[in-house]
Figure: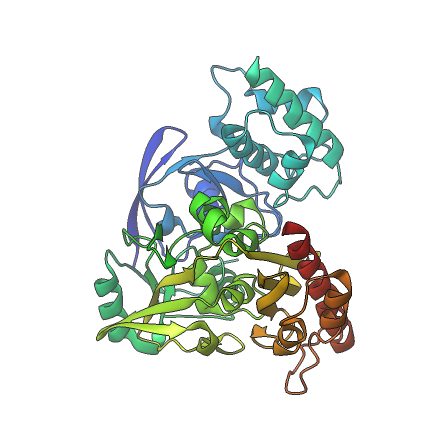
Length: 156
Length: 288
């Protein structure tokens, strides 16, 4: 039996009926067409599907869409404002924080939660906050630099 | 990966969840954070016909000081336990264990009640609640039942919970001023589960150990207290020599059936238990 859900994604309210077994990431990508959130390992290890749910970073491959009923979600698509990149996006661009780019949306959303809670993290804190996100190009060094760039820019 | 089809029920109270449980019996599974159940459902290792959401119950997420003990609502996520000032001050072991579960995203969703009721042999909390001498509150249709933690873990993924009960609260005694605790683990490099995890609580009186509690996770089919190590330290001073001697006795009980998999053999796990007993106790010694 399909279940009605109401979610706010990037400030917009959506109402849909979904099959209970539909994963939140599938709902975002295939029902709402928001393909900025990626499916990587699909087993809650790699973090490519990371989004923010009520301000907390979560792995949307390991959540049912019905569990997000009533929640406020923030995805990659909700970061830029009026055509201007969010400081974290800008950091990844400036510091070459991506190679193939597949892990990038998840990295950016995990970094988003970190910077909300800790405006000037040190390198160790950044690496710990990104522990749930894998970059198989192994470009971690520049990812850390990208987050440091964003922290500096936000604090300016 | 899609789970097999199921019917979804949103419980708004513990009573409503209990009546759904009694209605659907074995065909039902409770879901809170879903970080144990959903991965199993996606792999079709679990195919419940009914999933009862208890994350929608108000009032299962709390950490409260009740004087003698700290009460933790079963629906409390790991991140809240990790960051709780109350727990850090009065029973830091729980915060220490929560801080090394999975990764930040998992700690935002996964709950202490879900982890304990799932009883994964490699989960972090079981060792911590054993060493903390916690009490677990199960709520059923006839009311609440308090389960001492040493009776809770029955076997691999099996607990003392009845299928029509819900784990609703975890009670951990506050530690005294002359008590220190620590949790150390060897995380599996891919899954971050504990290949071996050691939790310890040590109380000192007149420079000697008056109370020692050591528990392991990851080693056997359930987490367990290691009385061999505990007894070796009782009434002894906490020095690198006494720790070395006691840690050498870890996981040596003949009745233990030590797990073995492609990552760690029985011998390697036993060896790691000794190493992590030593590291955990050394960390405690340096905290006095």
